Image (cartoon, one colour):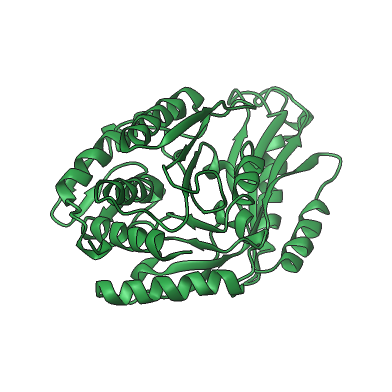
Length: 373
């Protein structure tokens, strides 16, 4: 049987995916992420894989590593790497329930990236059912903290990737269905300002607001953005009472750059903003994954061929967004990213996928697994 003839069933895939989407798994809730990992572990085991549950650390959820049966079991092969955490807090299902509306299907994390993860599992399941053995052994690694910059599992991902010839990352496809062949560098920063408390009504002039300090710094930070290196502040928490001048405020910022040199210059500019009332601590970093590496481009050419056979054009681009592909690509391991589903609204309450892309991407993944050697 040819992989293009595998009997992928969109209704079956949606039914299975529904279970995953309705198991909410925000990054900052390790118990919720672990519930999702348990679901994935069961489905991987039921598909025939040898499954390990790897405990979480540093307050994050655990991971799942699944290795599929193969005559060369344990030898270097293909790693499928994905994250199961989402940006959506528990309770998002109440406002963004799993639902299909015509050719679109909605739900928290369905695009980023449970849809792509599920498609990868389905591709492996159908290959096994059809008795088709991939030329190389396949390992799946699902991790719990990508949306936070992968603070706890970077070493796990890198060490696993080093054992393999190829890495496939089913993050969502770009608009138009494009794959990712390189990614920009990303750095995170923890910000903290301090003030002098006083009664905000009776003794306002005696105080100095940490919130005001932070607000002025935010304007400075965001004004540093250029086409080559951007800065944004995405989290701010400050003060406790409206009638107290705030003595503390904290925030989180993110910088994204096209090259490592741009990022290094940006980091230096950011750190120079620190003073007696404002501290900056460098957080996790995603290294630049330089585009056009020979191994990655060979994989991309193969994926383009397969896409043409399936009736669509696959383009490739370097991406401003970060993913765990940054780590494997930066190590020089051939990596092809954004192989997951098409959709829109990721990280919003309009997150949805194009239903037709489930089968399209499953066929693409299955064919890649059968032709990489």
